[in-house]
Image 1 (cartoon, one colour):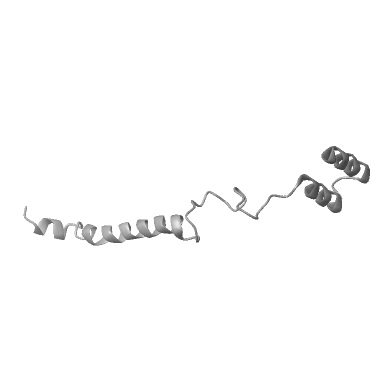
Image 2: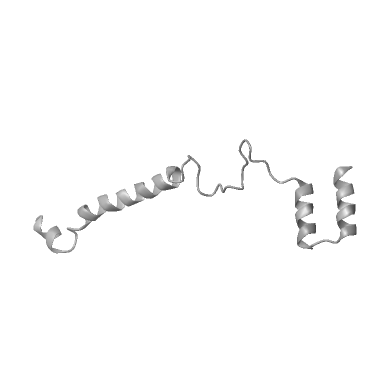
Length: 86
């Protein structure tokens, strides 16, 4: 068996396709690291960490929103508000 055996039995495409596969893998890894405009993995969402100037909502703000949506009544709102402010 000489070198012509490799070329005639389907193995000729491997040296051609492997660099393309490697390039796709490297581009995907680059996108995961740098494609979103910062050096942060994709599993760290926007809400996971708060940067400077991005404070989370206070408990009182959440309580006011719940009251505005009608999830809690006036007496319950007043009681929770007193609990939070004390």
